[in-house]
Amino acid sequence: MNSETHEQTIGRRSARIYVPLALGAALMFFLAASLTGDFPMVARFGGAGWVGLLSLIVAMPIVTARLKKSLRHPA
Image 1 (cartoon, rainbow, N blue to C red):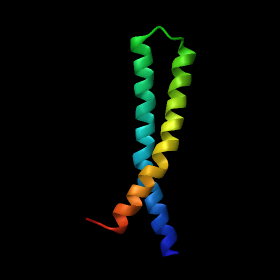
Image 2 (spheres, rainbow, N blue to C red; image 1 turned 90 degrees about the vertical axis):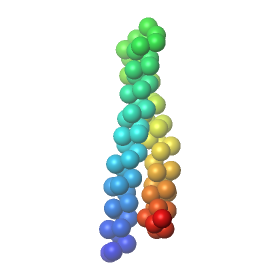
Image 3 (cartoon, helix red, strand yellow; image 1 turned 90 degrees about the horizontal axis):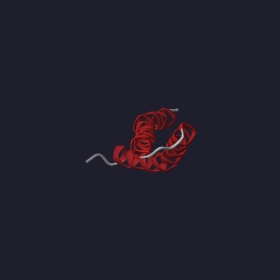
């Protein structure tokens, strides 16, 4: 049971890191598309959603693994 709570803690902490990263990447894409070009609104939102989703997929295992490693071996 203690291991489950530890895993849940790691999951929650890592989600607090990778979700804002993905949302920030999506926002940056949306702002860049809005400021630099004359793209339709559907393309801006679709691109931002796609970038956010891909950022989430990439950041999730990286952040979780690094957080596990840092909590296992504190410096």
